[in-house]
Image (tube, rainbow, N blue to C red; front, top):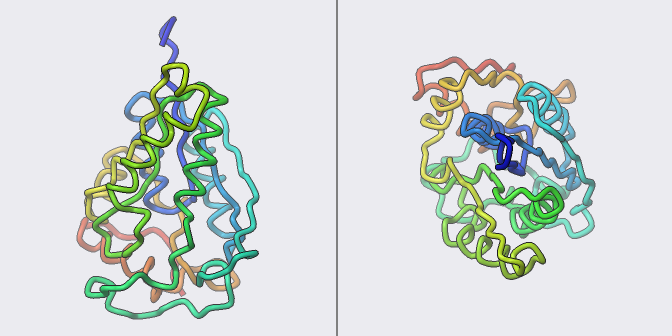
Length: 230
């Protein structure tokens, strides 16, 4: 950008391991980040607090939290009164789990796109991952490519010749590779939160899909997870 100004990027930041690593990666790539967190009615607010910690630690230019209550629709163990799966064999599962939030990444990328257009930020970072066995359809490469095309078609900035880029640096990495990336960047994973079913004190359960993937990733990466577990 002119005058040595850094390129701007909007980063979707949930406060979890993947989105936080993605934000750290964006900064390492030379971007000035505008962090966007969505309070979508998730049953536990612990990750919103984690997002605030991460944004402050990384020195985000702005950090916006937008409230959008998807509990109105329900349909997910993260927003509805549905039991969170525990101790299942995540890696052999062949179905989309009840922790899938209907159209969540489509909704969040749309919000990030609106934010990016107002800030003249042509890059949007999202920490989706296609190989962590989550089974979420909105983490697939085909979805990301389709949304990038939509971004140029659906915006005034795109109509005027601007081109948005949906950046997914973690898309084809294993959880262990993601953690190694963050550690090499000097990121503090003690700031993050991953658990779908934390205790009232905010401790991770160690049994939900997200905890299992996180713990396995740290073990394979050769590091100790700094979070406290029940």
